[in-house]
Length: 188
Image (cartoon, rainbow, N blue to C red):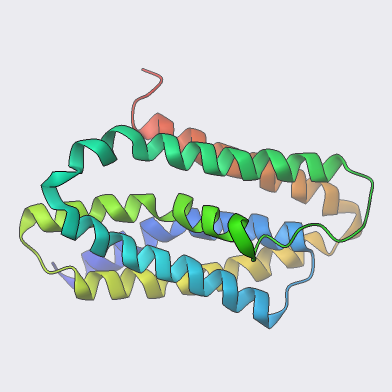
């Protein structure tokens, strides 16, 4: 596979992680280096490991993954999106739960990397090595996530836009989930 195609695939796969990281930055409003590292590392790690997992699973679980992966991603993104929308309307300004920690981060990492699993399955069926593509996919996702979380935090710092930004962030997450279902032709 040519490097140009691999970079385009990696960028396409990183778009969900980028959008989710922007929404996370909006929710946090202020982002530390530690939070940036945690989210970027996990998104990059999951994006890099999923193609390897898909490659090893090959044809054995292909029908399972194709049948349910989009629903899993939709439910995870929808859950986090609804939670963000509720928090946008919550007048309590106490610190919200940090989405770069715990189960929320794991759910987001899985939801944004399920497409990479399908790429690994494809590479397996084509008889291509997965190691170099997985590394590139992981690095691109890591970089896009780091940029996205800071972009989201910058947008949310404008106090008057903060609630709207969090609301839009939640809607974007739900929209990504719906987009995944749409791409899988669930509605048609």
